[in-house]
Image 1 (cartoon, rainbow, N blue to C red):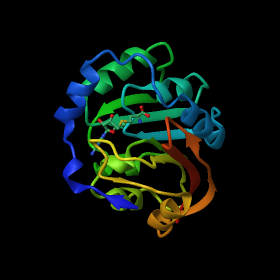
Image 2 (image 1 turned 90 degrees about the vertical axis):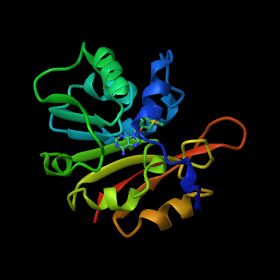
Image 3 (image 1 turned 120 degrees about the vertical axis):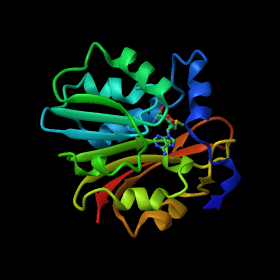
Image 4 (image 1 turned 120 degrees about the horizontal axis):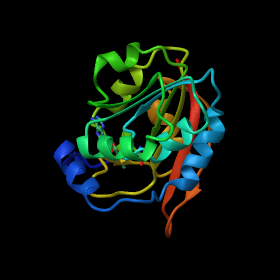
Length: 192
Ligand SMILES: C[S@@+](CC[C@H](N)C(=O)[O-])C[C@H]1O[C@@H](n2cnc3c(N)ncnc32)[C@H](O)[C@@H]1O
């Protein structure tokens, strides 16, 4: 794993980023893998950390999960997520403008945590993972490349496993090719 602490960004950075037209996500193939890991049903109670503009939320909600709570510290992203998901938002479905470090998130009655392309933006990613209740399933993705808002990135599946193995028992990990030699590593496991 390679660190780059100077790339840490606060919500205002993401508010600006999401204020630009942002209609499609480049992560569609990552979402497909995450959805196959999650296998959503009416009994699935999902918390999504850093839901952004709700691209994955929309796919999860369209499958009729019994509970969904997406959180993001960018109010612009949450507003866009609400617009994007409005067709599928029902009882027990929430989009909340808050930090992933908020304690209440981890007290929600959830079966599964989802988070795509967020942990690499956090200073204390392992601490955040450790806040998830033991026994909860997790479905996450992290990148192999540096970007101006990535605090860290991962050269291989092994480096992903090494970083999170104290808090997650890995069941599956794969790679999705992006541009050039860039990959995203989606993985699935259980909080231990
Ligand atoms: C690269 S985007 C990914 C968004 C979304 N998961 C997706 O797949 O499109 C990273 C997201 O993490 C959010 N984020 C970063 N740090 C956060 C924090 N401490 N608390 C809440 N959200 C955070 C940003 O606002 C942004 O929406």
